[in-house]
Image (cartoon, rainbow, N blue to C red; front, top):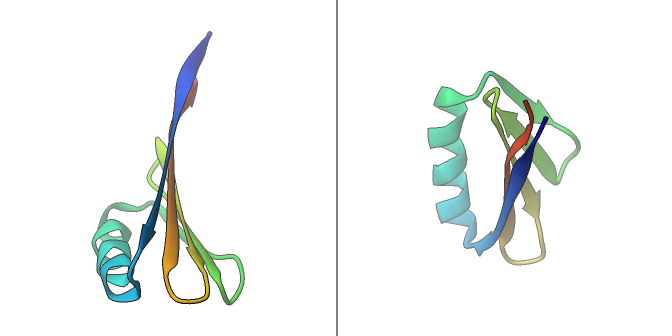
Length: 67
């Protein structure tokens, strides 16, 4: 049975986004550097992607999915 997927996207200042990334790294099972601009964290239930834009960072959180 499929569970609903929740997706949230935020645009944050660099310093705030990096502080958030450091906090989430402590809980993450996996921390993956996809390339120079994209990092992905996974804790088993939620995926958080940090994407560097020109002057800020996009943070995308996806949780839920297949049971």
